[in-house]
Image (cartoon, rainbow over all chains, first blue to last red; front, top):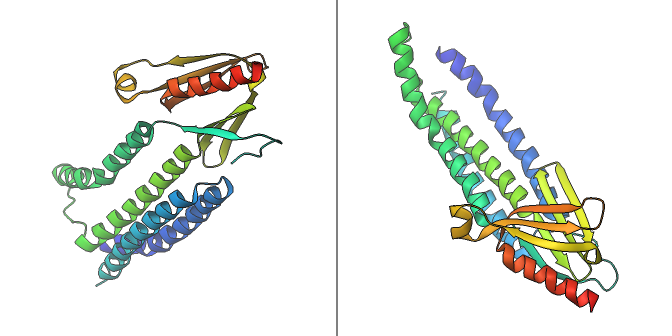
Length: 68
Length: 171
C-alpha cells in the first residue's frame, strides 16, 4: 500500500509544479493583456506569489518527509 | 482594456458586485477543508466494510493536502481573474460589455449610445436588495435588441450614468 502512495507522490510533485507554472503564465498574460490596474496588479501579484511560495514550502517539506 | 475612438473618453468601469467573487471564495474554502472531513469518514467506512487496515502515512497525507490547497489557490485566482475582467465600460460614445466567460472565452458587446433605447434595472430577491446589486438591461435599436449585464454593483448608478451620456448626446 505504501509503495503505491510513494509512486503517486513521486508523480504528483512534478505535475503540480508544471500545472502551477502553466496557469501562472496564463494568468500573467491575462493580467497584462487586459490591463488590470497597476496598483491592483501589484497587490494581487504579492498575495498570489507569497501564498503560493508558502504552500510550495509545505508541498516540498511533506514530499521529502513522506520518503523517510 | 478597449481601443478608444477619437475623442472617446472612458467615463466609468462597472464591475460585478463583490458578492459574486465572495460566493466563489466560500465554495472554494469549503472545498479546501473538505478532505479533512471526508478522509477520516472514508477510512472508517473502508475499515468497517472490508479488510482495509492501512492508514495513510501522515506526511503523505500532508503532501496531498498541500497539493490540493495549491490547486484551490490557483482556482481562486482563475475565478478572480474572470471576475475582474468582466466589466461594463461606459464611454461618451458607447457602452462596452466585456464578459469573461472563462479563462479562454471572452465575449465583447459594443453598443453605440445613439442606439440605446432604454435602460432597465432589475433587482430581485433579498440578497440583491441588501447588497445593492442587480441586472442591467440595455435595450438597443441594433441587432442584439437587448444586452443584459447580470449582477453588477449599484445598477441604478450605472443606469443614471448611461442615461446622462445618452441625453448629452441627444441635446
